[in-house]
Length: 380
Image (cartoon, rainbow, N blue to C red; front, side, top):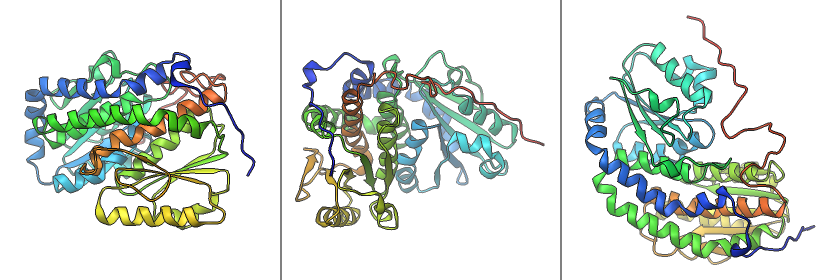
């Protein structure tokens, strides 16, 4: 293996950046998000109550990029806990093929996530849903009080504006991702019921930040040529978000991919070289965990394996980032502490490459709020 060795930087010696600040602020922004929800609980419940009483209500979790991956993380869990189908549908899919995703015959709740609330596809998806007719309602969760989504309050919509500090100034979404994900989880779980859970989640996120940064900085200093993120169930969505964070923050310098633990064997495993880092998010579900551990064991005994890191609440028998005090957490609560090592790894890898984390793409070919999208009106 040819390994590029960078010097791991002490956290105290890191240059100031919004990216790092927004990663580190997540314990506070999670608590602040829950406080906003508790203050607005009556309005949220008055809006959602009649909708959730409809047995045939279709719930869609929508967004673009990282905002879409919130839905991928939450949809399986909410489907099981609510006892009704909850779909994750990217706004980029809705806009490009609305007839495949919008159904005027069914009452629909479209939950839209938007950091800025100004992404062209997010706005267009809401408009297309309204144009298709039928009983469509919108729950709009955004971090920007001045964004286009925040101004769409009506009889068929309800806007939840999260604390200003969640409106990340950096290019890559970090605290906005966790805050919007918590908002949806809390709203559909029961805002009051989430109060103590949010405290435990925030405490665990703080502990992971404190214990993981030196470790991931050391991993980033090894200059892996490829990085793979694996997760089962909810954690496949988290693996996808983790892969995107590294791709964004390194400006595409490090090839990344994501998959489920079981799915990885079916061809994608060919990506692994001696210079590959594989980060596995290990489920707390007893059955799912066994499959994650089988994959870890297989990778660790493979003659051509790379470096395998388990992000886990229980010892895995090898190199791991142990998320302490959360062995009894449901997987949905682990989404919040588990994303932190991936965010920090992307940050430190970017710094080692000499990138500016807040704006890693110096050419301007990608932007904090996507540009260059032409919205085409579908034929009647």
